[in-house]
Length: 338
Length: 291
Image 1 (cartoon, each protein chain N blue to C red):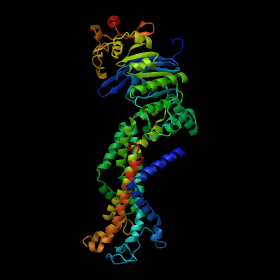
Image 2 (cartoon, each protein chain N blue to C red):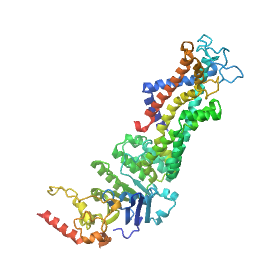
Image 3 (cartoon, one colour):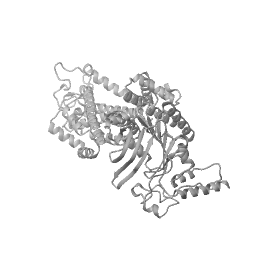
Image 4 (cartoon, rainbow over the protein chains, first blue to last red):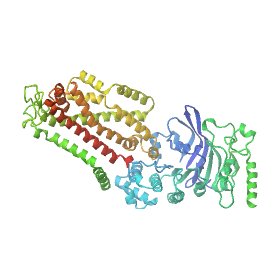
């Protein structure tokens, strides 16, 4: 869809290993994707699959025990090679980030306005007064009522939804090119969730930024994403545009995730779930990382790891037995028609 | 700016809503007024060091309060003069010692927790060594080495008084470092030093401020204890502890020397009480986590 454009952010073979006392943890193990201008890339996966570590690797915000490899290029600049000073100029200004917990991501001792102004003053050389006005404008844009009053309030005086709006205002205050949203709606209730997603979409239209939406919630992905990366145990297991992924999942994991969504249109006695849990990152299984939980697992899956292959145009999956998933899909479809 | 002012006003109002805060502040104000007005209340002799209590009589026996010497005389010194000018000494000891030692503690604690690793390890072990020496013993040895005098006592108290603050601030910074707002600030491209000064310290400094204000009171007691033991201020110095030390020889005859304990003792108790009440009040009002 966007193949004619050049990617804004290109991540190639990104690896993030942590050296811990218990051994090497391969949190992110060779993932590649691109983000095009103005699009939303969804990164989806269960807790502990490396979604957030991937984001922090891009921003270079990990502690020193993290070992980041591979290439990350933003508008032609290689981020891992930039000096810390230059990287600081990119953080907040070109690539901004919003976090999962609006309760803790704002500093409790400063007013909301003060925290928004800080970034504006830092990156845009504005005076305190100008920055204050811009902060009020930003708060108005993210839909906070009475922005002139709220700007001088402390985070504890705002509700969860309002704090997340304030976080978004903070992240967007310098008009970044890429916004990385790390589970921005997970801590919010469903109504507020929908409002925040709506807000992000409308701000995206207004500013034309790209969004990397990191979430474990396929509903959120369906709502906002143009293309989707499905991650499992630090690897990309499927990569396609959102419509294709939802209509025609190829990897057993994606298929399982989609099946696990409760449906209102058919009668279900028990909800489907993927058996087991994400394996401990210190002891990933041999072969395909998903083999411990996969219903289609065979001997081969326990010995060698499948490559990420292009199963159709622009649709990649990492599985030896895609045809089995196809069969199973056909069965459930037939079942539905009964 | 106006908004910040109203916020400040709101805090002040909240502070004065609580009766004990009002009491503490009032006591403190009275002490401040006494300290300021000391030369008016008890004018020192021209040319003499005002912190030397003038000798009222050459007899060593205590003299009960009279109109001329309202708090009586002990060791030949006028107790009233000592108590009034002693207020100045008390403020001097309390403020200078607690502020300087807190500053050392904040610097040590910040460096230690920020750099971590072996820097942290070495600095914390040094802190442990200082902590392992009993405070009073250490202070006594220091004053023996440095010699007598209130300024020497202050130096000794500073040298052995910074460790708690260092540990407190280190622990708090380590905790604050992992808070998400610190990560969020980093993600906005804010430089490290600014994150420490602006985002981490304000979240960690309140317990230190409370400790400082409470310590001001107790330091006066410690200094008095040293004076009482004879390793503090030189004899005749206008300091509550020095007056108490004169009464040491008359302890078995309280009926003759009660005033030498009562007046400086009361001053000391009220001074400590004032700082403790103010410290508590400050914590309750200004600590954002207490709201």
